[in-house]
Image 1 (cartoon, rainbow, N blue to C red):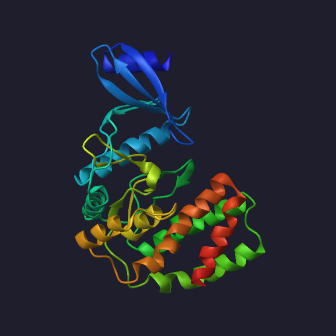
Image 2 (image 1 turned 90 degrees about the vertical axis):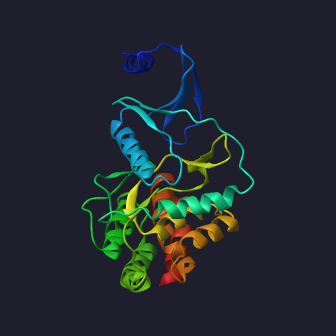
Length: 282
């Protein structure tokens, strides 16, 4: 059955318009309008229905914090994810400050363990959230850095230089992070500038999450990967929920997870950045 027919069957309405929009590197995204004038976002990932399920579960988890707007999940199907349509707008006057406060409030929503009830994806690579753990240092090393390193080995990106450097980082990692642990908090997981939008009221909306419960510094690290959000954002965040001393020193360590992931997704152009970050800490 064609995708359009499947959607019509699930929402009991005829679709009168379908327009493709940008969906990043992985998803197919379109906006549909029904006979009654309702608008929805539709996402599909080819044959990978698990990504759809993970995204729906992630959006629902972020919504529990009641801190930042996320699109409502309307229908989850094996072939598509139907989301609330949110009209895009322009940033409000105090957008960055509001966003910083909102993210800090979201990070106050806590879980019992690090990880999530299911594994999900970071881009198109698996993100390992199970087994959930009481130990942040162990969880981040095993499920984030070591997993991506082993994937890089599999993808033939690991040479003698990277192997030696990574072994030295393993020896130093615990002492760098020890003493900064906090309770598990809900994280967007992939919070860069392309994974939020601005709604018609001028406020931030979180999209495309890779949710798990972790240390909030790990979420802030991703915000800095492509140049960072502006200083007003970080000032407002710290005002709402003060960060641990020297948090900026550890940001690149948490960013390393995403740089390794980009190495595995997009190739050797990210190799030099991986080495540069590791050398900062060894």
